Image (tube, rainbow, N blue to C red; front, top):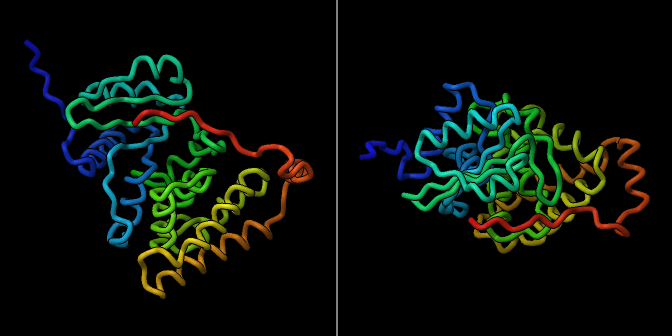
Length: 254
């Protein structure tokens, strides 16, 4: 008889905190991204308009911490998606919660979707999530934003000022560090900021809240545009849109 009792919390928020506490206790280099990270980062600054049901959890883990994180999830009661992990485990893994019909999506050694982001170098900045700038960029790099992604970006822009550092703000210096060396990344960010600015009048917010988001979009656009660019950026800029500057990631069943 199997006496194993799953440690997984039925409430996804409680489960995110339980896993984050275990990760900290075991000193595993992994942090939350995605919708749950945005909820934690915003805290009591999360606007009711942007409240949404969080169905799955997303983490970034350093390559050397892949096995310890996998072991933690298995010990907790998750089931590895053996087929997916066998094909993709060097860069991405999936673990299934059979009781609560949820998934944990693990990005290994970095983050690669429409663009590649070097997220693991910033794993130690905050205790449970990646910093707001990194979480924001995982959303901004999506070439075809859906409503959920747009609202997540609006939520971060409303709950976080733009400035230097990471404590309670979106670190503009970190963003321009990446965009100034990657023309394609900057292009996607600029396109998405323009779309977000255009769609802002239709969002269910007060005028002052819309103005706050609009000002922060403008600030980020200006900072990205005016920052000095690397030789790599300038070489790619010569080609421009004549060559596709983003990847189309494969869909993962969630």
